[in-house]
Image (cartoon, rainbow, N blue to C red):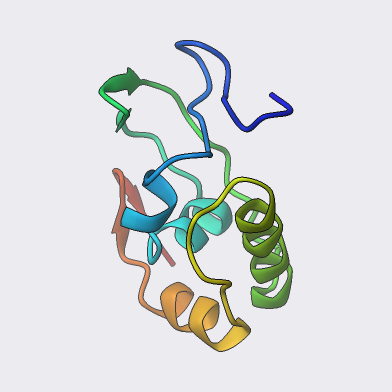
Length: 98
């Protein structure tokens, strides 16, 4: 939704502490997807986020900084930081990485 509130029961919101608490995992979610249950603000979301494996670290950084600018509460991501997180993706919410 325009306010980052998600879609009740179907798509999780992005305007909450999940971004801060999962900072290192978010780049992995974007590149490799995820297939597990997420609990955000006490609400369970079951679904699949498709991977976008062709995105480069700079593109993922731009996406994350846009989200943070619009709805986030945390500091901006750097390209080096995102690349480091991507280099260390192993298993994020049930999806095997790399």
